[in-house]
Length: 326
Image (cartoon, rainbow, N blue to C red; front, side, top):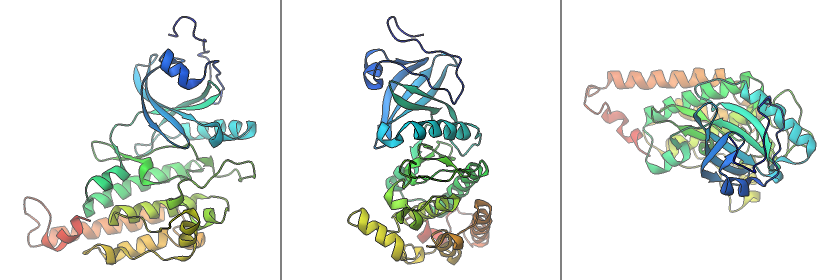
């Protein structure tokens, strides 16, 4: 499938194999439009971790996303080899609330993760575009929790859970994206491990202290996402990263019930537990959190059913109308 003169790439490679092409990836994309058997369609994103392209898999006739990681985000040879192992572990995931990873390779000296192309909008953009209704936020929370539970069940710590890394599909289903910082939970962090802080606004107290990340670190970040979904704002603030770290370490976020009227008290309890400064005081696993989210959902459904105007065309009782917009 390569054009004349383009380097050939072996097709007999496993997920953990390295495939190398001679031309730099960006120039190769611009000049030939092909990387191995992937036909580049367009660049869809760029950030500190790397560049993401939409592409067509010419072999399987499917649309994929190619994420090329910057060398600065990977580190040396040991980190590169470890990332292959991590991507292989992530590729074993098959869950409707988690973006599927198809393979990992190296092209033009850059690490490339080939993943499912997900259509929709990021949760972050959705929150900024219009207020989330309470029921919608609860359902999204349940879907994210199910996906995170599947990630942790494979002993993987994501390390960069945030609203921008969660896509909401047209059918309303959320998908956890971007495993560029993920690592297997049974492998201890070392001094050679690439930076594990993820996005500063979502970093946990232990990350702010430069301590190892665990599954409970993801629980904290999910707590930040929950706070963001129900309030429209982040729980911790600072003029720079130093001030933000101090806020994360020392400040208690303003209760959600102060920011948005009509929220059930149990929601404050859920978020407070997810955002406990000490990891031992947080939810110990996603299943425990899901029990509380499910109870919240059942409580909400009960309120809707017993409301005098629950049969209205909008299905938005007056008692909850204040909670239906941020």
